[in-house]
Length: 105
Figure 1 (spheres, rainbow, N blue to C red):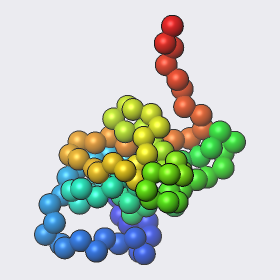
Figure 2: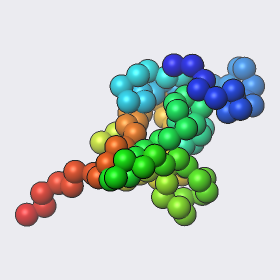
Figure 3: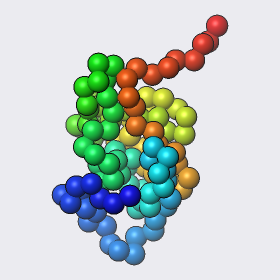
């Protein structure tokens, strides 16, 4: 994938260590330790998820308070991506609509 928005181009040195992650099934090279929300803003359209009514949402506070950056990370739903650093092999899936909750009965 390429940068979706030039304004989100990384300021990290060119020789920074990198990891391989997957965003919605597409392989992406990321700077090791960057937060998932920042990676999504770099490599996807501005919206990172959609509400139950289809309204697009995007990370807002970048400190875990607003919950606008939720995504599925390695199968775990409702992860706040602004708090989680990327790691090699991470699978990130942006959300669309309500989450399917597991049957816990």
